Image (tube, rainbow, N blue to C red; front, top):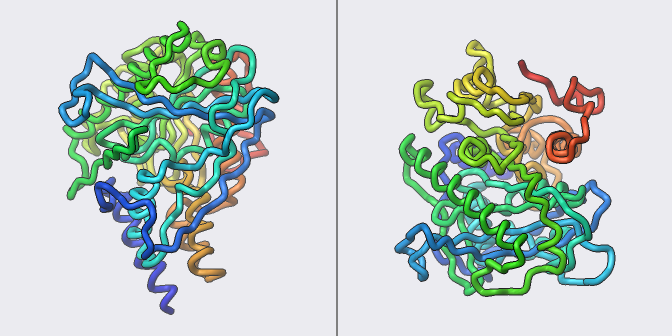
Length: 425
């Protein structure tokens, strides 16, 4: 009974936080080695592509935007670059899931959310499938940007970035400093947003504007790399082959939750992004039908994919989870469009928590019979492997069709391979 009560308490806390979009508390300067917490690592699903993986990070400073809180006085960002690695020519260390201070901050948030005294998700010692700094596979690779959920770390969709990179894409994941938690190379840590109340429409509007400016700036910096320059603030060595590996003529973008809104808004403002995808994110500044975002009202003239859960983003006004912004975008969209529903899923199904929650609960509670119920309420019902594979395959099919010019039958009609994925019209 004690386990039952703890799981139910955990669900109340985390679901309230999720529904209100209110992040949970954690110290501004977390201690990476906290003796009061037992660390719990987890396994990421293996990438499905044929290429080995490499990764590196870039510290970027935007000289055109002021930020009085940064030592430079300018807007500073951290991004990760995930790429297909050369088969020979390097053997770097395995990349960890998160840097220590970001890991401690995020891990403590979710430990407190689940009411798990003495246990913390150990993101700092969880291995990814990529090696740090190894050479990039030869050839030109399409580029895909990623923007995370509000106010999530860029690392919480690592499995999707790894999978696309294993299929031959260069994926650039962004933190949005001051909103998402971020650690810089000098050890400086900037915590994420932690409001006492749900974000207002004005805040969301400002956040999306800032994120969009971040994405456009990152594209500018990738052009610098392509031109043979190193934009990293510390001038750390770039992986061999990165300059010659970027095909910026084929650039896409996707995002989770508010990152999906960011992807659409970036496409509205910047034609360099040729195709975009939204993973379960509203396109509105608030739930007020009159405050749908500009991109939802205007639509785009380039391809865009909507991929939603059961609990949001429905097109039918009579449906219990109708989202006016998706309906408005569907009506105004002039380019190719597709709206997919991952049946039985919840919002967290579209980030790495889709598999992390199950592993965490089993570590703490063993084989408690309530675990599947708890996990189902957090990420949804159905087979975990199928849900992850479906997201990966549809996302890759979308970018293969519109960045590589390879028509995909998966995008034409519902597939028997993925019975949980429905086409919504």
